Amino acid sequence: MALQTAKTEDPHAELRARLDNSQLEVRLARSDAELAAAQALRYRIFYDEMGAQPTPEMRATGRDYDKFDGLCDHLLAFDWSKPGDAPVVGTYRLLREDVARRHGGFYSASEFDLSVLERNRRPDDNFLELGRSCVDVEYRTNSVINHLWRAISGYILEHRISLMFGCASLPGVDPDQLALPLSYLYHRHLASPERRVRALPNRHVEMNRMAEDAFVARAGLRSLPPLLKGYLRLGGFIGDGAVIDPEFQTTDCFIMVPCNAITNRYVAHYQGERSDS
Image (cartoon, rainbow, N blue to C red; front, side):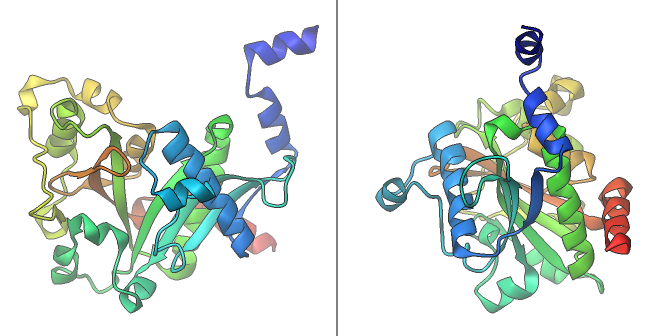
């Protein structure tokens, strides 16, 4: 009876126990089967849970996929205490600049004009696009997120990445209903001019929908999804203009995070692991 009471009071206790016993592994996908498992997780989160609109082919396979999947590295979190050959519970898609250049560019270029980054390129610039991030609903704990970010910090060090970027999504496609978060991002986290990526002209949605003195900054921060708030805490900043994504039923902003802003605890943890190996 005591165990039942503890489980009711803390629904994640069993999960944390598994993580403490090192049942969670975070690494890059090594096979088509592992990629397929990540795509199936993405489908469950984006389409079943969040209401995105799948193509008939995606609905038939139960997987989210596009032409970029074959170009990217896929960071996966596995819980090996779960049944199955590839029990993927979290994923991030990583596209390096050198790969993107060889294969037609970045995914985010379909929504945003990235040319300002090239015009104002710095000597040490090396870009990484992050996307398709999701975590199974039962695993949305700080422990799982921290494991993923520790692995990303190692990837950044290995490939000498200077700037991470991607499309950060707000749920919904009505900009007027998103006036608070869009205006907060515009007034408080807009990129400097030399890094200010803009939405493509034919897709540009104005973010400055409320005067800065018309809202309380704390309320604006609270209105953001947790992932976007996490990027801002890492020193992230926002491009100018949002984009409506009808497939995913979201309003996308362009988020950039300088890699020197990644918290020291992630880097120190990764370097410690390398020295022990």
